[in-house]
Image (cartoon, rainbow, N blue to C red):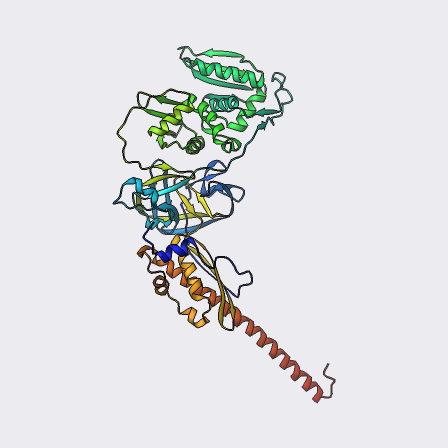
Length: 530
């Protein structure tokens, strides 16, 4: 956090006059419109979705670690500078200069261990530099689901599929089986040839037996056959059950690129999710004692981001990389686990007795607390952009999470409400979304304005506000200007309302006067005036 005076911290931590005046005489609002480019990936409904495809029916992850409703989606043309920000282990995002990002600015002269002593704040993109720390929320929304419905209707001409239970208990074995399917499973959905299958390396006998026993125990189905490839390197386990094939396809996806973890599984308690991770990693991942590395690879973008979320919930640090795939696939996604503590955790999930070699510990650049994953900005660059940009208006807590950054709905937004009596600001309240300086400025402005005449309140300047707060850092001086502007806008709104009201009253009085003249004329002409 930048250096703030004691007064700034006092008004930031204990702001005065926060709230709204329902019957306010004047309302003033100021702020900075902020946005991201169309392809920015957003964490939404346990999926990763480009912002241009977000709508009101989709809930997005906010900085509190919970999903919240989108009230409005904004799209507008833009021409000017944007900031490209690349974050270690997370990815990159392009944002407009004023977009507020949840971050902390450590003292670069001190060692890493002191970083944690700095308080996080909302910083505009143009305030951040390489080496600053961004905060990425850990998914905290949890739903303890005991079972899942097998809502798959048996087709009319399906005479082969065995009748299955209507509900499946979400046991550790079932979650591990789901993990196996996500990595090694496939389905055929032909009406008469419904098949659920798994392909393993022929050396993975433990996993092959695990799949066979689990499906038999849960669904009372035995494999129709085990097919070994000509080279004897792979074994294909085939289960003939159209009903079961449709269930796995609907819940876990179909095809390598279409695989995903169902929303209900993403919200399970993290202890249960370990078994899902176990099956996933056994399929397309490995843990190497020799290389001191754990790695997972998939061509499903959605699945890759979901696994990253599950690892974050386990407080496992992973590197997230995208590469060009060979053949018909365009990209593949890799998750690497190298950190000693994280490697120990993934090995424990896999029930492996892994010996961690003593390594010279480098300066740690990423870490977890109970609510966030902290990672450093690796690169930040200002580039010129022309095209559409998007923003989301999210209900409380007014934020949404992208691929690599936690973004505020808006820039520093301030709304002031005033109540006027006998030309005196009898009451002043505010609502502010923004950084600590913006909140402190709003609080101070409300205190300075309350009790003043309209004329004196209009004379409050940004310099006056900064002086009352014993100064502001240079990069936060714009906040004092916004505070004064919001107050002035509220006063102008009051004066406009008053002027309109007086004009209406005057028009009414003139009408009465004209009506009196009409009556007088009528009487003069000998009429009754009615």
